[in-house]
Amino acid sequence: MEQLNRQNYRKLYVQLYEKIRKKIDEKEWSVGFQIPTEQELCEDFKVSRATVRSAVLELVRQGYLTRQQGRGTFVSKKVISDKLTMFTTFGELFLEAEIGFSTDVLAQTIMMPVDDLADKLNISGDKHIIYIKRLRKVDNKPILIQETYIPFHICPPLLEEDVKKNSLFELLEKKYEIQITGVRNYFDVTYLNADEGRILDLSESSPALVLTQHFFSGETQIMYMRSIKRPGSFELLIEFEKKIGDDRMNYKFSKL
Amino acid sequence: MTESKVVKDLMIDVFEYPHIPYWFTIKQAIMVIKKSLIETEKCFHPLAILIFDEKYNLLGTLTMKDIMRGLEPKFMRTPTQKAQVLEEEETSLYLIWNTLFTEESKQLAEKPVGDIMVPAKFFVEPNDPITKAAYIMIFRDLGLLPVLDNKKKFVGLVRLIEIFDELSNVIIKE
Image 1 (tube, rainbow over the protein chains, first blue to last red):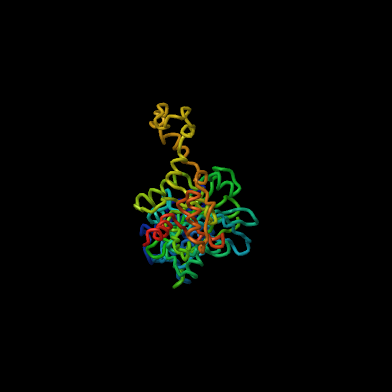
Image 2: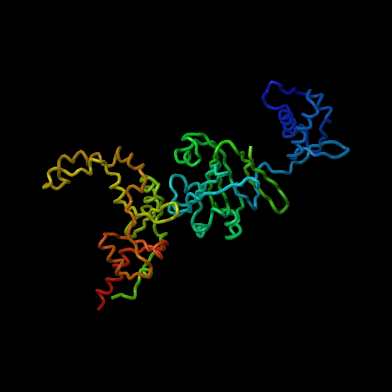
């Protein structure tokens, strides 16, 4: 068996995980195959038991392997999809419960789609759009700018809703019965313009994480959201849990 | 007289007109006019964009004339010395015609529309008589008036064309 590279900066259990995963993906170890024991893997790769356990545990967690007590560990038929394709509800970006946060509504108005916004929302250039811009703060410190664009005809009353206190998702789904059935997320790094820097209390051209999201109800795109996160203080966690009849994906910030 | 007619009888929906926030640039306003008015071949009068603030309060209006005026280079705004000659026949202006709306105008197009819009200073209320709306429009040379409920909430627009149509019926009625 191949040796792991101890000079590589990446942790040994990660390298071992990738080696085993490659064997499964390339069908060298097929579904139902009983993988070598922990002891055997230790000897083959010259690593500690803890390293083997970490790698195997991660493969079990992701569904590539399954443990059968008293019998061993086997390659399983993977049941969790690589693509996050099924959603029925979403939480907005939120913070862990014990963190107090506040929201400032910087804008709640109407505009026409300019630049590439019509393409992003898949609408014609003469359609009105509800534009909502909010600033999320923790301990009065700005951490996130969120800009939301919703075609006016999708939900006209949103223009007058209290989006400081209420979640847009709850308003759409529960009050106006517009179900969100899908989302596309894109992550990137951006460099703040002068206005964004001023709002986040950073200098112009500072780097920041930007998350852009396209939300769908059936085949129709109903919302485009762009969130810019101030570096440091909080990390963004996206977790997906799949339960029968209640698929859910949540976003949250965890304090570093 | 059409004393029974009030503004709300002739009011039109605000969404008949494009809306943009004051921070949009003149260049963005041009794109909105092209997409929302020219390409859709909407023929209402006046052809204008409504300008709003962050809280959806109406700040002003912007027409094609306002945009072109906003893109004029500085030297266009300087009056010619020979006042007795029609300005457009002034030979020193020949250079201007050949350089209209080029480089300096491109830079000016990055200005916010808030700098060049016609502020919405005048308004009527839904139950005001249409003759009041007519008076304000004529006296202030406006083609469009916002209608505010309780002097606060923007609920519609009234236009000179509908006012004219209604008032003129009285005149031509036999």
